Structures are given as C-alpha cells and as structure tokens.
Amino acid sequence: MSGEDSGGARRQRAAWLAEFLGTFAIVFAGTGAIIAHGVSKGAVTHPGIAATFGVVVLVAIYAFGKVSGAHFNPAVTVAFAAAGRFGWGQIPAYVASQCAGAVAASGLLTLLFPAVQNLGATVPSGGALQSLIYETLLTAFLMLVILQVSVGAKEQGITAGMVIGGTVGLEAMFAGPICGASMNPARSLGPALFQGSLDSLWIYCLGPMVGALLAVPLHRILQATSPASPPARS
Image (cartoon, rainbow, N blue to C red; front, side, top):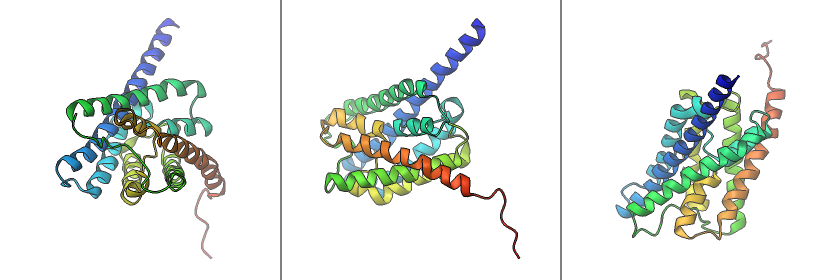
C-alpha cells in the first residue's frame, strides 16, 4: 500500500507541475507576443498574437495532456468537476498551480522588459458589462468544445489540441480587441498583478467561471439528444 500511495503522490506532483508549466508557457508566449508586438512597433500583428495563443495551447495540450489533463485554466478545472469528470478536492491544488504558473510567467516578463507598460493585461475596450458578456460567451463556447473533444477530465492528443487551440486562436482573433479574450482567470491574473490593473480583474474571473459552468448543461443536452448512429435515409 505504501508503494501505491507513493506512486499516487508522485503522479499528483507531476500533474501539479504540468499545470504550472503549461500555464506558464501559455502566459509567457501569449502575453510575450503582445509585448513583442509593442516593442517591435507592430511586427507581430494582432493575427500573430491570436495565432500565438492558439498554437501554444495546442503544444501545451500535446505535451502535458497525459500527465495532468492539460486544464491550464481554473474555469476549465471547475467545469470538469461540475461535469462529474474531476474531483472537487483536487481543484485547489490545480488552481494554485495554474495561478502560480501565470504569475511566474508575468514576473519573468517584467524582469525581461522592465520599461514596458503593457504586459498583456486584459482590460475592457468598452464598458464592463460588454466585456463580461463577451468573456462569458467566449468561455462557454470554448468549454463546450473542450467537453465535446476531451476524454474524462483530460484534454490530450493532437486532435483535441488542434480543435481547442484553434478555438482559442479564433476567439482571440475576433474578440481580443473588444475584451482581451482571456477566457482564463489565471491568464488575466498574472499580468494584472505586475501591471497594477486590478480594477477589471473581476470581469476575467467571473465571466470565464460562469461561462465554463454554462457549458456543462449544454454539453449534457447535446450528449442526450445525439443519436448513437446516424438515422437511416428513406
């Protein structure tokens, strides 16, 4: 039993490390692209930033999906638990690992670019309600896609990575200029702490959480009404 317990503890630590590393990579690459865009006077471009977020999510899922499930997002972790795919008791450690990864990435970017003011913080371009609705809907669609293509509480494999990464890139492309297209409280937390833009952080915590939870009953409806096989044509 002690060997099994030890093995389980190692797997847990590996999962926490994977969540830390994956979230670190997403924030470092994604917000790093925003910083590079500013430093290079627009060389990265908005489509380049959106593509960076999508591709780094794909890579992180492929790299860490088998270890931790590749959540990298507190809203995703909570929604997996609400869907009955993940233990509620595991949420604190996962969320702590994700937030630590995001904060570490933003801290490193602050050290590398001390003169840069825009560290990739998500702030509304219009009213708070507008961005709140955007973040809720964006995350609901993203989480619905995740639930549809994942197995249990794990996002893994090249197919899931491509679909989920593509969804992130798509939503960042059309919604980034409006609300920042965070869809991830940890992604918004890191830059906000170092940039001092905490006033709007509640939007990027509440919106993604509500949106991710909305996706759970939608997924159940889709699963319940989906035929096991296509109906025969007459």
